[in-house]
Amino acid sequence: MSIQTADKTGFKPKAIVKKLLSSLPERSRVVLESRFGLGNSSERVTLEAIGKRYAITRERVRQIENHALAALKKSPGFTSAEAAFGELERIIDGLGGIVCEDDLLNFMTKDKSMQNHIYFLLVLGDPFKFRKEDDETNRCWFVDAELAGKVENALKTLYGGLSDEDLIPEGEMIDRFLKELQNINDKHRNNEVLRRWLSISKNIGKNPLGEWGQASSQNVRTKGVRDFAYLAVKKHGSPLHFREVATLIEKMFARKAHVATTHNELIKDPRFVLVGRGMYALREWGYTEGVVRDVVREVLRKNGPMTKDQIITHVLKERHVKPGTIVVNLQNQKYFKRGKDGKFSLVK
Image 1 (tube, rainbow, N blue to C red):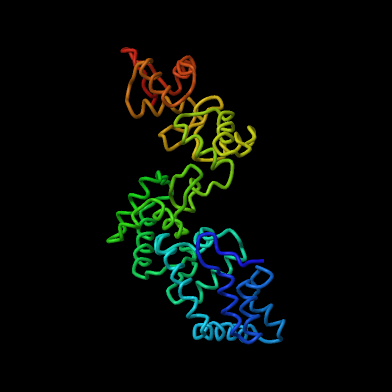
Image 2 (image 1 turned 120 degrees about the vertical axis):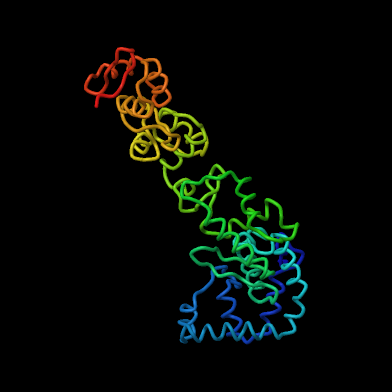
């Protein structure tokens, strides 16, 4: 069986790695094959498991691994692999100069075994540097340290300017990101590269509607029905009955949403306000919480004495009810009184 090339390269990673490993003593070769998943199994083996196999400590396995990598860099096979290293460097540069490890490997091939061989070449090759994964950043590879630093700093500044409620269309998010990036090459000023750079940050994320914000925000991480309901109602732009919300979730996100479950989640979620019989709106739209009487009181508190028609007009902007319901509430003399001029005001 022939040794295949990676999907996006012109070289054969497995053939190159096989030639490199052939120069090592057997134990060193087996340790590297096990650690990087280069053998018959694509699963990477832990230091502890290898140590048990050879009755040595984890630290000794680590020493063997590091010594073997150093030996390979001095071997004739390393020199012959320079063309492959150059091709990998070109690919990383084409992807933006700094790219998440998963994005890079998945771009090159979907084959897990092939990915392991490419990863091994990345670890071994001199042009490639990696950024360790931490609480803020995904593990990524780069070939230009200065560019990598600019991207990381821009991501931190971008995140610092986001509030928990922010949901930003992708075009606007990319524009904001570009403003934080100084003196980058024109070849990197395209949406594909900028989206790839955004994915480096663990603090910034995108919801199913393609809107960006803080990755920890309910508006972005969409873990349950209530989060999908919020996005559905927000996208619709006006109050909806809970049955309509359930239908819209299924239509927009291809996600099963039971009507009763959806209604229960809308009731419990403080982002929603009940504005009519089964009708819900977003609190952020300025709707007042409470029954019709509470809305009437808030309208009069803000505007002073008003006629019946003026009150009805204002309340109907807040609640999906019949005008008669509003009139009935105005008759409650405990809360409202009608002056000689026909205008209603609050009872003090």
